[in-house]
Image (cartoon, rainbow, N blue to C red; front, top):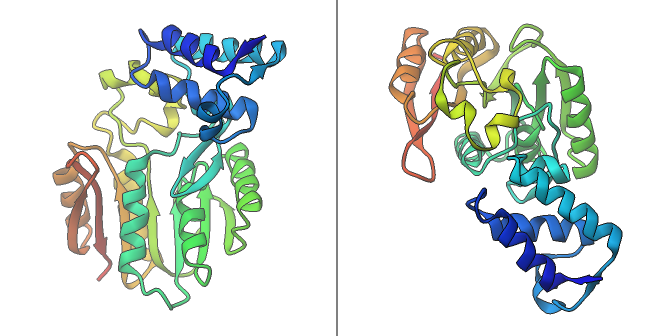
Length: 278
């Protein structure tokens, strides 16, 4: 039987030409396989891995070499200090989106019973992270896909986010009443963007990535529809592409939003634009 140390070495060697995060990929896969924390790999390098587990590990390495995201292989991804179930029906939550969560938490009153809608919720990562940080808020996780909403419900149950309710809707079409904030990480990549043929996004659902010729079709819809569902001075906060900040600010302005600003991501690029309904 192979030891942990042997599998780590072999895995890194196998992934080194195809992944720029080979060591991290290997450690995440092994920890999930063994149901152990990462520290176990260093504390017990001589631990012997069963033949069945070893075969599973090498199967995952083969799929990772083909470009399959690690999150899809193990069905999980950490976001905002919580572990979310993911599936090939949804985008994989990314660290830059935590900026959107931080922005909403910083701008809405902590003690008020705020009502917030997360449009195109995907895994539910944004809605659930907000709900767990503010148990007195009411979150609505909104998506058009029944399969996605089933995954959201599983994440809600696992993480005990009891203040999240789920709504099937095409953006704002079925929202009822007024909200203190509407947030979204919608599709925002142009249909002919070359990055769609690179990296993990090759395996993510195209419908959750692209939005028209300039990538802004869904953002236009959300900005227009949200106005009628926000309280006076209610917050609209949207994630978008690094090169779309100016265009998104113009869309917000054209629909009468006030105090518009764009926040930067971890790489110092435009990532989240927000504004307030007047």
